Amino acid sequence: MGAGNKTDPSAFRVCDISKTSVDPLSRVMRKRLKDMGITHTRVVFSEEIPVTPFSREEEKDQGVYKKRVSPASTSFVPPAAGLVMAGEAIRILTQRD
Image 1 (cartoon, rainbow, N blue to C red):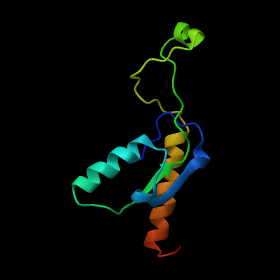
Image 2: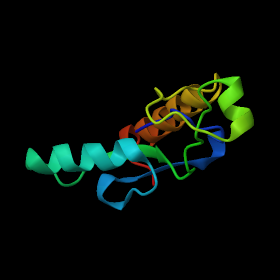
Image 3: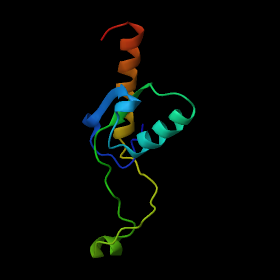
């Protein structure tokens, strides 16, 4: 699921999408999959609450947040999610729990 606005690579978990929490992308995907008749699938998601980015330095100083900011990625977080996915794929292929 989403790695945007996350900073903790150790917060990634593997579970059924119906059991995900906190992750905004998981929420959207649960609804879309449910509309398609899919209720269960394994996903990697982060239990970390996404950080709210500041839009400009002067707004940061004033404590004002821009409402719609595209999710940003910290350079090391998406690769960590990929490693968790690869590990899960190997476990499934070798049938190890």
